[in-house]
Amino acid sequence: MKEGYIPQAQRKKILLLCDDIRMTSGVSTMAREIVLGTAHHYNWVNLGGAITHPDKGQKFDLNADTNKIASIEDASVFLYPTDGYGSPEIVRQLIQMERPDAIMMFTDPRYWIWLFQMEYEIRKQIPIIYLNIWDDLPYPMYNKSFYESCDALLAISKQTENINRSVLGVELSAEKVIKYVPHGINEEIFFPITKDKTEYLTLEEFKKQLYGEKKYDFTLLYNARNIRRKSVPDLVLAWKIFIDKLTDEQAKKCALVLHTQVVDDNGTDLQAVKDNLFGYDERAQIIFDQGRYPANIMNLLYNATDGCALVSSNEGWGLSLTEAMMCGKPIIATVTGGMQDQMRFEDENGKWIQFTEEFGSNHRGKYKKHGKWAYPVFPSNLSLVGSPPTPYIFDDRAEPFDIADQIMALYKTKIETPEVYEEQCKAAREWVTSDESMESARWMSKNVISAIDETFEKWTPRYQFEFIPVESLKQPKHFVKHVIAK
Image 1 (cartoon, rainbow, N blue to C red):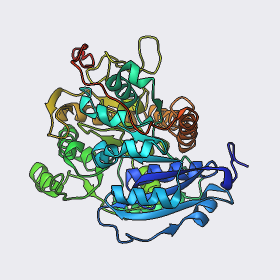
Image 2: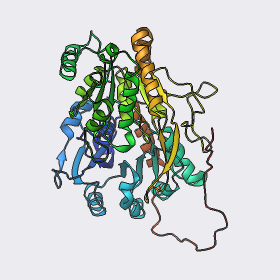
Image 3: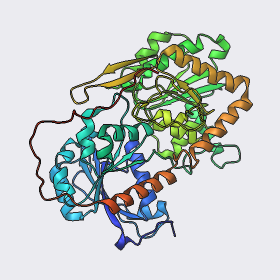
Image 4: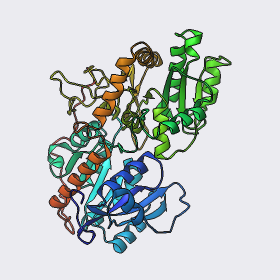
């Protein structure tokens, strides 16, 4: 029997608002792992979104599949597909039909404005739990009302936990359950494939499909969407700078694998970028892979490459880095957002860094020591950008020459000191599965259970009404401290 098991009839029921948990997006993947990892402790109802959902209006019983995967016998997991993320009317209907004990939602707060606007109605009956993330500083005071509308804030990154507390302030933070709940990867699905593994022959066949008959000495993977903030053209430019420093023979034995859309309206035309930078240069070994793979094939893709790069200018977490580390691969990443967690920067006392109101990010390079598996790229500049819904946020831009330097560093380690490279690979797997990092699916599920149980213990219903006195402000509005310099 699983630790924390509760019989189905005695479990609390959670209404989960997010992507359809059967799908392959990052939100879907993490939400699915949470459901599977906690189905022995909670009953789940997923209002599962998609842009235009083909199954809209139906109800699916996922109990049999959940029982099989989660190794239990009495799961209660149901799915209601919907367009977008739903509406007030749908949530009201589901509250009446399913009688959930809490609502939990996941993804950018701008998708949940309609839900925050009805929080008073909901929180008179059940608590609202928000699995949330925010990409960067300055502190988003425009999110304060959203955070206030929740009973629990489960922060995916250390930076987000600090943002939640700093934006709310001490008094309001004390009224909430605020917990660090990092993304967690299933270590039984993503793992290093060595010659003694049964998957080894499958991996060799996959490499033939990916690379044809070519044999490469060094390959680097990009696995994320082709959207502007991911800075994919900068990575391609950095690859050009990198191979220009190699001999022709060395360059032809290196390949950049771009597992993404070649053309995306939210990003750019990567084929055109490649053609402009490389022309007909035979050294331009850039492989486009647009396949939509299940998790077991993604495990092959990570194992078929020597490292993973993500050089986003904004990144809440960076799931491909965690998956790569689970497969025992080093990572190259911009020092921004949740990617900082995965590089494990150390403070002056040798401890994994903690963020405070005064020290909200390491993107200015206060701390340089990091895990041996990481090749960090510190931003060369911080640009303050925004839009009416998000008036200000830093854009942490990495210089392509700096990215190229880290690609070269990983390349030289792999080629010139393979024993050091193997140590890095081993260290990546060991740390990401450790109790310290908590970046495994088993730890994510434990953390979710701990946070939700604490929410139920502390929650009290909102009053039917409240009196708000109208008077002149005696105290200035709460503003957080911004220490921009190092």
